[in-house]
Amino acid sequence: MLLAIEQGNTNSLFAVHDGENWIAQWRSATEPSRTADEYVVWLSQLMAMRKLDLGVLDACVISSVVPQSIFNLRNLSRRHLGIEPLIVGENIELGIQVRTVKPSEVGSDRLVNALGALAVHSPPLIIVDSGTAITLDVIGGDGAFEGGVIAPGVHLSMEALHAAAAKLPRIALQRPARVVGDDTVSAMQSGIFWGHVALIEGMIARIKAERNEAMLVIATGGIASLFHGATAAIDHYDPDLTIRGLLAIYQRNTRDHPRPA
Image (cartoon, rainbow, N blue to C red):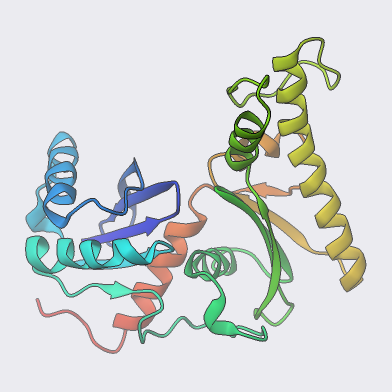
């Protein structure tokens, strides 16, 4: 079975694929200082709750945008699972052309999302991923990654408001009943929620106008699920985009080098 690990700046996803389906998924807060020993205790307990043993894992693929965590994730795979992991960005074949000025600077998460989208959708595409940052990435008609947009995410914006303005409280993210708030909290919630919806709608419109072509818009990420029902600009919400991309990378890089039985 394959263990796929996708680590963002805020959350990390661990998922198990049995060769046909994803059979388990777990999320944890990203903590760069978490050791391999701490990871394995956490993972083994969650797997046991699903009647799974660590010994069933025989492959591992990792994508991380947190460089200081890669050492510990690699040790988790090597020391505790007995597996040499595939790490996105380290001499593996992605199977996608990166048509940017500096391809090495494109985050692994953005490329993995692109592969996950291309596995089920025909380009050209716009991929919206809402996490610590909101990214809108463009996949050209020939399937190449052509760049995109990066903007502060919802939680960054909420924390910035609270930290920089003495009288503004820390608020919970939710869709307000009305655009015009009648108190401080509802006004902030409207600004955060509808402000980010407007950002997404505006950038999608500008990208399409600049390229002068129809493009399918795919959204992923936990926060993006809130926006999907609030705007017609997003065509599909796909929570499994990233792990589908990781599976495609694993399959591409092991196709000619099957694991021993």
